[in-house]
Image 1 (cartoon, rainbow, N blue to C red):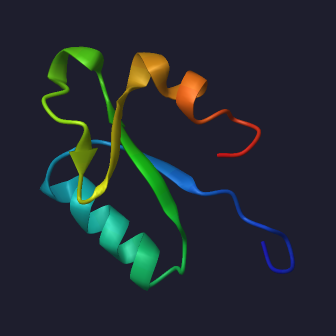
Image 2 (image 1 turned 30 degrees about the horizontal axis):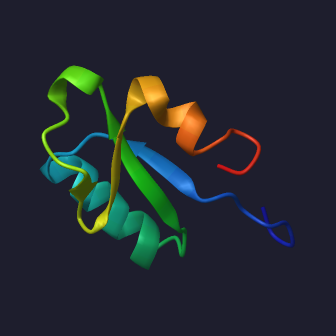
Length: 68
């Protein structure tokens, strides 16, 4: 998407693989990660890797598709 503003990404997961994906996307692909998301029943913290961790069921309320 050269020349076009890219939306911040939302990553599903809060484990090592999600952390690795965030690292690669941030450092290698120069993308911004806005938050992590997982199913509400698995949320045990408000953050992951220093970013918001939002229940998937509330994701659109906090990060609308128009901007993320």
